[in-house]
Length: 100
Figure: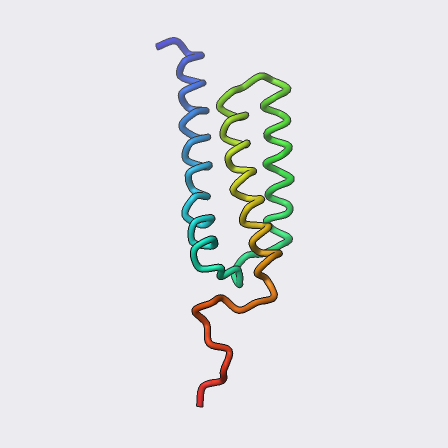
């Protein structure tokens, strides 16, 4: 393999792993509607960072960066939207009555 193929393979592997790592959080948040541990500030900053990585990928024409960041941005924004939508409500499985 040439060095450029190795570089692209490393980029593709990194992009795949960092993107796939968001799927469990997005799925769990969607399924449980529990957003109590989600920080609006962190996810806002993260989504902006991912959007900038996406722009960077477009500017340099790197498909691994573009594809990974489109998917990651979609998942991060979905989690952020769920946090904003469900943030004021207790998750469905949590009782709001005090224990006696």
